[in-house]
Length: 428
Ligand code: CMC
Image (tube, rainbow, N blue to C red; front, side):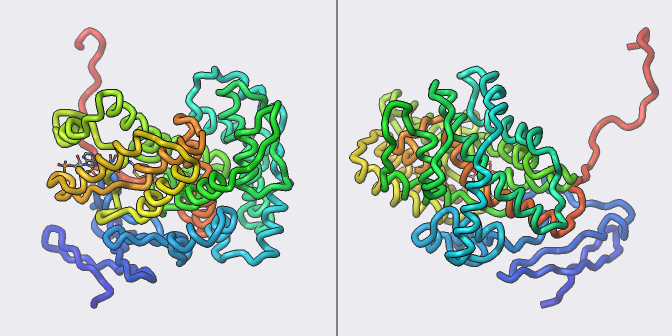
């Protein structure tokens, strides 16, 4: 196969090099397109065919349903690793040995206090504020308490910034939920594992001893691993592009959190449960909602279905569906929306509209059901997703900064008015 692509524009041929990845993915390097053609650009709204970077972090094959972090399959990682190991793997490229992992955790724990002044900021939010808005604001506000920008050329400074955010973010997640529930804002317990501590910070009642439930802990750990990275998705691209202006790590993450909030992305986990609840309230008629989803004059979409890259199945959804059954039965929870979800999935998988468009359940179709069984309130689901995605965002930001990537600045094809002389007020 040739290592060049030829493009002909108005009778003139131009050659561009091909870029080949380790999994044989091929891209056309059009960096010089505009300069050699005198102004021609490519246009690709939604970046359906555009690679924004070369990356060594996550590989996915949407046709084959493959997802790997740093070469390790998501199935192996979900079964054999814990979230902190996966976080280290994503950020630093290799699985940590016992000693490295212990040091990593110890360094995170040292950073797990948040300035008490942050509580004033939380207090200023109404209880009704959506937790995603609160967590994005708090992540941004952390910058005020940690004002020195990261010297990306110093490995030590980079490492310190990484453990700082990994230490403080779970505290903010817990406080965001506790504020909404009127519970005191407390710290965790550094004798516990990373995820166990998150659970304790979220659920400890001031008048009761907290006891870890192993089923809940394992389920949350797995969910966080499944969400930990997903290459150049909407929020990750947002983190990279924000950071490409050399904005700091914390505000780049805050931008990513905002992008994650939307129902077409991370907000789908909340939207799925709200949809399943609405179907239940409406008598459980899944056929009616299938018809709505297929009706082009109706904006309703089957939330938790479809994916930009997975056109066969979402490997995370397979793991999560199995886990939903296990968690619910282990916890003895009977959730009628699980039956609605299963019914909807069965119908959609047999429906020509969904088959033709390759629409399959995605990771968030079942994640909300598990979160609910773990006692996490619906509005917190996307915040939990952000906790899981945090290492991925950090890894991608680090790769972008160390790779000295240029500022992200797409072009456009202008379709507005051409030049017109200014009209004075009396002539308008
Ligand atoms: N229900 C009904 N129709 C759908 C759905 C859906 N959930 N998703 C896509 N379609 C149709 C869409 O109307 C279009 O039909 P047509 O070709 O006739 O115009 C076709 O399928 C292709 O859809 P698209 O919107 O062009 O595909 P996309 O790649 O731009 O969008 C998506 C991907 C995930 C935004 C979309 O499938 C969707 O809105 N799904 C529901 C929201 C959701 O579950 N999001 C979570 C994604 S996974 C978590 C994460 O990683 O963020």
